[in-house]
Length: 188
Image (cartoon, rainbow, N blue to C red; front, side, top):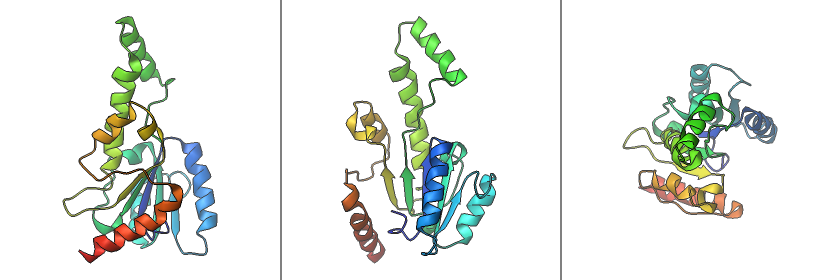
């Protein structure tokens, strides 16, 4: 995806460990192709500085977690792709999540369907909003977490988005589809 978009990609993670692992693999893979790989906590811990570095390099990939799901504005053609690695559920051992779960359980309510899923859907929409900031923005969103299509609750995530065309695509079809879509989009 990063190569097909020629950089201009933001990847959102829910785990710093996974971000770190992907960062090192991408740095190694794209060293010869002049794609700049920037990772939260690796290249800088400062979100503003990382976004500035991303904007200053025409072929950059930005990897972020937690704070990058909201409040990062990269409008226009500087950002063409968004990768959502995992659905953004709050860890079940998070103190606030535990307290709210206990509260709901005490009232015979399901904490997963009534709290975890709605909160994750809100965060998912916030992540999606990193790509589409103005009426002129466009791009490709890839959700790597198959729960979005494999589970009943996954439909809530997709239905929360503001009407983009969505379709499941195999890994082999991904890059050719992205390239074809970008070519057609840029001819408009």
